[in-house]
Image 1 (cartoon, protein in one colour):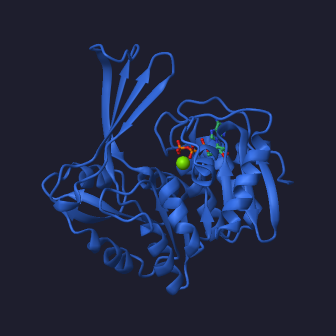
Image 2 (cartoon, rainbow, N blue to C red):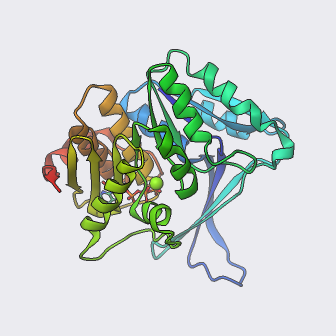
Image 3 (cartoon, rainbow, N blue to C red):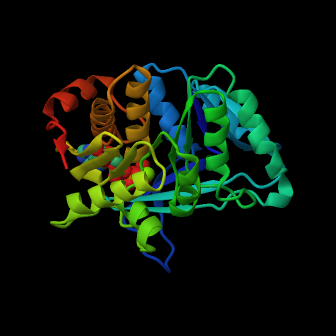
Length: 316
Ligand SMILES: Nc1ncnc2c1ncn2[C@@H]1O[C@H](COP(=O)(O)OP(=O)(O)OP(=O)(O)O)[C@@H](O)[C@H]1O
Ligand SMILES: [Mg+2]
């Protein structure tokens, strides 16, 4: 399958005792890897044994991204630009708190934003499906993923979209085959709520997820999933609505759970699973992924036990 993540980046993860804004801190370790939501999706697809290609921007004069992706065995289709490569800075404190600062992406003057869709069109050749994942760099209109959905549908293949509120909202009229925002993103899109808490809670969480998924489905998503971290996810399709609870696991790194969820769900859909089984599989894959310290990575042996421990899908 093809994974479209225009806003690729280098993830620079720094470990430190405590992050104190306004002071100078000293790190204990720094690691740089390829990043962008779709890179995590590809990592998970590779562990699951699903053939894939990643399409995204890459700085012409800096080959670190391409080199890092090649070293991971990720087939990369670069869309070159002459700007500064995008960085994502991740601070992991001893106490377990994570702080992320995401770069914007290259200036639109440094590349031709019109070049993206033709690149997607040629990379789509032979792909059984396409997943669009992550933010868009400046210069790409909010409906870019919608246009990718349109392109995919014209080829008779499914298109799945995971992006921030504005990008997701602009994709809905194109009837993506699956969307999977977290509840904060979904409510920001539907009700203009601005906060994006990393972990949501509250007695009404299931109802909020189901209500948001119903609305996303009503606005065009064929399968609308709304995720809620360690709690689980709601699914709404033309056939009904369900709540799929998650399973309690020891968490090493919750960042990227949504990306692994998308990869696991996509993998199951491509294997012919029903919608609820596909989302259950995505939930199990994400449960395995959060137990791994690196975003998007997982021990494949942990998927089956997670699947066995999951509650059945409950009609909502
Ligand atoms: N701590 C956890 N334990 C078990 N399963 C989890 C946990 N966190 C997430 N998951 C699973 O992963 C799915 C997606 O998680 P989440 O809602 O955090 O996505 P997200 O906010 O998009 O994540 P990210 O943006 O970091 O990729 C959840 O619906 C759940 O099934
Ligand atoms: Mg997400």
